[in-house]
Image (cartoon, rainbow over all chains, first blue to last red; front, side, top):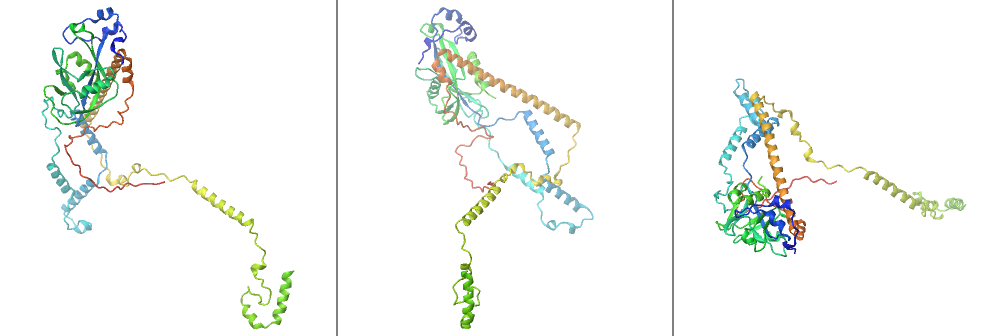
Amino acid sequence: MAAPFNRVYRPLWRIITTTTLNKVVRNVSSTRRQWSAGVASPWALHGAVCLQRLPVVSQDRSPIEESFIELMRQMELERSLLSDHELRLLEDAARMSRKQEEDYDSDEEEEDYRDKEIVTAQDLEDIWEQKLKQFQPAPRSQGVDEKDVSSSERCLAESLILLVEKDVGSQKLWLLPQIQWQTGETLRQTAERALASLPGADLKATFLGNAPCGFYKYKYPKDIQKEGGVGAKVFFFKAVLSSHKHLPLEKKSFAWVKKDELQDFLKPEYLKQVRRFIMAL
Amino acid sequence: MAGIVCRIASRVISSQAACSSVVAVRHSHWFTSVLSLKTSMPLRAEPKKKKKVDPRREIMMKERLKKKLKRLEKVPPELIPIEDFITPAKCFDETRIRDAPKLCFEESERRALLLKEWSRYKYSQHQTEMDTINEALEAQRQALDELKLESEELYKAALSPDMDLFPFQHEGPSYTPPVTNYDAPEGKYNDVTRVYTQ
């Protein structure tokens, strides 16, 4: 397998446009370094997985959608033909009005309607309304606290991303689960290994294709850089959660977050790259 | 010649012989005379030409039947009716026509404005969707470029199609979340769909 160090030596403009800020607050100007080295700079490769729990329940309608649905129903009703039930209602109403008249002759009525207990259509409607009031629909949310970030049952109407807290250097950072690439495997296998190596989680996921969906590049702080390796490149792979046992994950280290909550967890530069491929429509 | 001789001989013999037994036999025209030569009608007729005419006639009959069958088969098959396209007779009933409602000015204005609002909302929704998709595609393209810079083999592995992905199945969102350990009851049904054959 080709190791990073015999790779091409990148042109200047690329370095200027694609360098990212260092994680530690040092602004390393990369241009001088890259040009001076005659050899291509080695980047450590990492594979990461963007595991999504897709929505389980449909979204609530926004106010404009509600009003539009109402309007559509009304217009459809106006343009439709009368149904059997409505015809029956009209007939009953006509018969009642005929009964109220002074010159009502019961013999003129048809055979079926003479002196019999009739269930009018209006009665049927009342019965149906009563039944509807007694119906209890199932609850839409599982009753899990929406703020509890470690539960994957929160916010069933939206897709959630799995985040993991990891020690990087001296800091504890929230990241998408990632692991270093080893020679002899493809990056997708690295991502699968990253998912499997999460402690205590029995997550079954379907990876969507062999190609990465995004990447993030960062440089090591200067003191580590001397040991070898300028920085690391992380390639993200998308996966969809197919099933999981409802084991409670360690609260402190795992988080299931929506796209708009990501900014509370991730560093700004990392977030900027990650948000590009996470679609929350 | 032989036939004429036979006939004369039979007349001579019959006039001379005793009448009683001969008369009884004479009831049928097949029996000319007991004493005469046994020549019945079929025997006296010409022998049938069984060798050529009959096979030809049979062949002719078969060909005629085949032609009739072909003519019948040439008729195009009756098309299977599409039941969705046949409007049921109930819809043409005149008693079912609803009177068009008279809308006041405010109501018609409200409707027109809501439709325009909806069109704007849907347009903006579509724009955000297209932007999100294009952003994701761009991110993927850049990731692949970076990977290519890193290693050619990994890049090729990333480009290769994933055989295990399809057929891909996923249960979409429902109105209420699925009940855990739900035991669905087995249902029996009578299938009343009409099946047509051509």
